[in-house]
Length: 635
Image 1 (cartoon, rainbow, N blue to C red):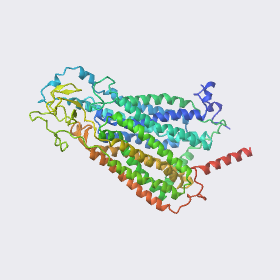
Image 2: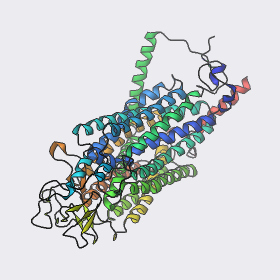
Image 3: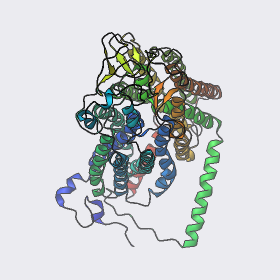
Image 4: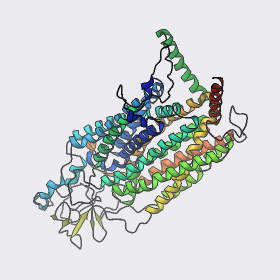
């Protein structure tokens, strides 16, 4: 008899190097700790892109649609490799494979930061040290104070810089998706194979809890790095200045390097902690392998067809896709939405989302899980638990849509359309169309320093402005001092997010139990793949298109059109929330149908007693424990 493993294979180390002092770490607890840290870093890196959308668009001149396509690249890589990774879980050394996937994550983060080094923006310090001769030229020339913002929005002024940046970040996001694909199925299998059945959920819960805090860290560090200028030089302009570009690349670099460093310990764990060697299976002939592979492929399609034939499962799948696509479209541009609607710098929106959005998801998820544990969920009760929170969520979305600040008003620009640009306050001036809003001390916004009648100044302060009583203006739109709707929006969204997240666990339970036992894994796989392909993949792209549809002024013209400089706030709000409301309303209709179909169902398919629903795999776990006891008794 030939063995596929020996004593060394169950020890921590690499190849023949397995020192005794390292064996104190040869436990599932240490693996959970090491893998939990990597999950924290990888989830942070995945969400960090969302926190820096505005900054990246400003440096490289991306539209929001293009930014959405970049974020969707993550799910392209994930969808392409998730089935391959799941199939390979039984054939590879899982800890080392997880190590490689985390290293790939780190490489993707570093790759996303490379465009900054290839095409760095022009340092503002160089402009400060120059004489102000150019700024004091006659305003009859088209060169004026706002010329600098055009250079910044195009990156380095080279049209190729945006293309190179787009390609590198897209490749990095695809690699992120590839690295994400094996993590959940392989980590779950490794924990399940090396722990007692009842402990698997406990260790997975620790890992998932750490991963949930990743987005909070991403938003927190994103807010911190957004307050640092992109070149890391001290500058006199502030983050509210429309020319401000935060150090977006720092986060990709920090998370990328940290992921690579903390991935290394994973490779030192054994493929199994079991002391008893497993008997190696004899290799089957090639013809038999081919027939088995063909049979497996046919079996996958057959099982998928049988799963999708279950009406309740298919209806819930479509309802979940509708809910997730609306959520994904909004959350992909949530920082930008807050920045535009409430005239705040990027760092503030990141801090708000990190401080309130992520805790709301945690509370809702925990509450939903607690509810599924306390209640004896029959199909009818479970469908009601999924359906009822959707109605207040829809109402709260309507309420949030009605909480907003007024559109920023620009002097002499009543219509606020790109084909009706404002005239300078003095009729004898000719100003360019480059948009660089400035704020006067009396709270009046001007299209640019030229439109305010300014003839002197630096890039940080404009003086001798004939149209302003104080004679000077500062860059950026005036603050919304008379609008207090922001915290109402935060509070209402917090409650809505808690309610929405509370449905996640009941939905998971329903998906798992409404199908026969043999189709449980297939139901989870189909649900994950369908939501990734039809919700998370198109969601950011749709969100970007909705944001771009509300744009009034663009940097560049025609084919060289870059990022948006000024939005119609009402159109942006209606587009984002209108799409979300439509998706949620469709999901509510489908869930109402599910409630009707399961109204008289008092037990799950294949179960004899309706009380047999306290835990997901309770009957399976008990069966395995009884089998182990019988085996020990026989020995």
